[in-house]
Image 1 (cartoon, helix red, strand yellow):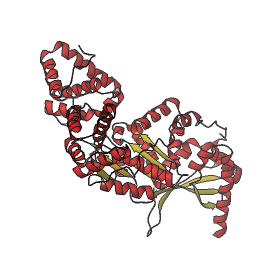
Image 2 (image 1 turned 60 degrees about the vertical axis):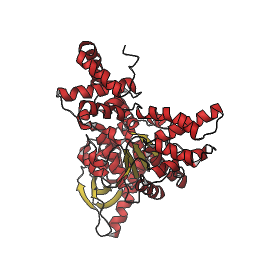
Image 3 (image 1 turned 120 degrees about the horizontal axis):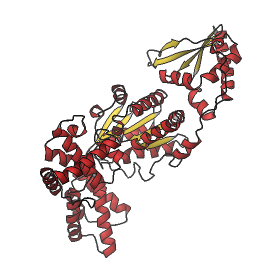
Image 4 (image 1 turned 135 degrees about the horizontal axis):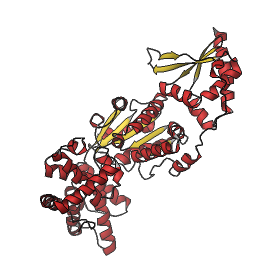
Length: 477
């Protein structure tokens, strides 16, 4: 028995020597290093691979190399069989696997043509522009902890200390706009990089991930795409909800997720809602998301806002009396991003006019600022306003129903998003249930036409914009 084990290891090592001659070192590390030789029975070599996806990828992309290696070591009657792990098991039970029988090398019809391997250069040149894509200013040191984010921060710190080895894998941080989700997940990434310089950490927005995948499909470089993402140690995906309705993107991400998770590499995600409320996602993907921890980020309480204000002023080297700090904390009842925006404008006013930031100046400036905030136009504000005006739900706006009473509010929301935000048509479509470019354009054109031909509809639009305190967009006289 010992001899058989030694023989199978020796044969597989010789096969690897052949494989190395025909593929890049990066692809070798990704697809062949995780393989383990299991047994050698006559001319049948059995190897163990980490997942079904792993097996399928080898068969699709590297079968020609494997044929050459087996032929070289075992001759024309040689066979390669796979043992595929389907359950990694635990301390009490071993892993569960199933075998996939192989074919004789002689039956491969000697199709051993050396195919040119797709080049990674173009894709890597694109991704190398941002490397980790982390903002070094986002750290745990300047992330203010409060009741609103304590669980998320604690979990994030645990992941930062031991990426991939805690039960928080994946870690999903969810919450509304401007509450610090991006700050927190990038702080995790920055800590990992600082403590483990050799670990490959990648932060990427979901929109960037989708664009990369679409480009790889267009250029026939899906293998390069998958290889790149499978080579990271920590993958951080921002705004995972934008994968909604994108079946092919979800499929490739499912496979990447499985492989990274099985090799104990860390996955971190953000979302605008809890995992269980994500719409348009495959059930098998949602089940994977639930393996780890979901931690919410809420609007900051009064004490947390005061701490944020004080930290910001200290960082700017400016003083602010406690009474002014309290006034601002009470006046800005939105999110962290807006609170920081208020402080920047107040600091600018003080610096430009050479005035001390006292209560009178704060009241004078904050009055207009708070007014601006309450009517700030973003996609959340637009959707909320449209839902209230037409008495529909957010699910109605994002849903598939073609009922007129739901289609019109949906089209109005898309129209307002186009005219009052800087979002691309593609991104607007994602916010409205993953609708495509042509649907978004049709909605905008329909609203424009109805404002000309339907007096009742035009009156509704005027009233809605008045309630939202919006000025008519310059593009519509």
